[in-house]
Image (cartoon, rainbow, N blue to C red; front, side, top):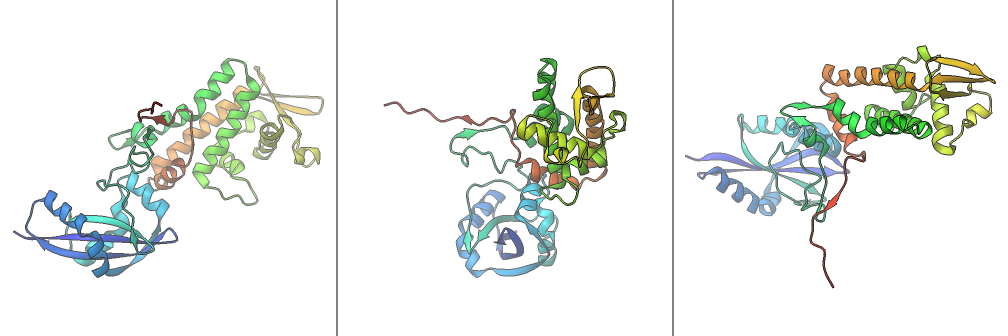
Length: 308
């Protein structure tokens, strides 16, 4: 019994897909043979394909993120609807850039491993964070954030390397704010915006802006004198390790380091809950997290060293 199978082509222009080209074949063969048939016909079918303009174009970043979340087909579902393809059509999907099919590897739709395959990384293997921290349909975000950021903060704090630990904590807020908002600062930095939205610093009697200026001084110069502090535009703050939530000394406001860890930790809980409340946020999370680096993700060379 014959069935319709589909060669589909995502047409990329400046990393945006606005149309999908297609060819439909009527064949009578098993699935494996049908897939092989479509793959062999990619260059031929591209030349004879017809185009469907998408009502909602999508970016390469969104497509990659949704593919890793097993949602890639949602972006071009309208193509199957227009073609009357039914619930589970058999198809091959090929990206096309400047009229040239881009075939680097073959995988099934819904395979999240699209970046770190050894055949794409020159015999280097690296743990894929999404695969490592996913069980079933659940991504363990608390463990991911803990392993990538807070393990090092805890280790340096417990070793009494407090300045290094504070630098790591402030840098972690930077990274988490980037994951939430992307690289788009306005009048308020994303560092400050994240703290305003998710963390409560009132017990420490400091503001997100003051913490931002402490971050600038520590990360750039390892001191307390950012440009805004030197201009007396922002109050100078520092930190201490002790029971008091804050105190003043010689014109400097000292807040509790451990108190800040607690405030940020509570903020992280509220932030991570937002991904349960709005599952669509996971698309931007995956897209941005794929760009981050971590001590827990090391590239290991798997090839055989040559001998002279």
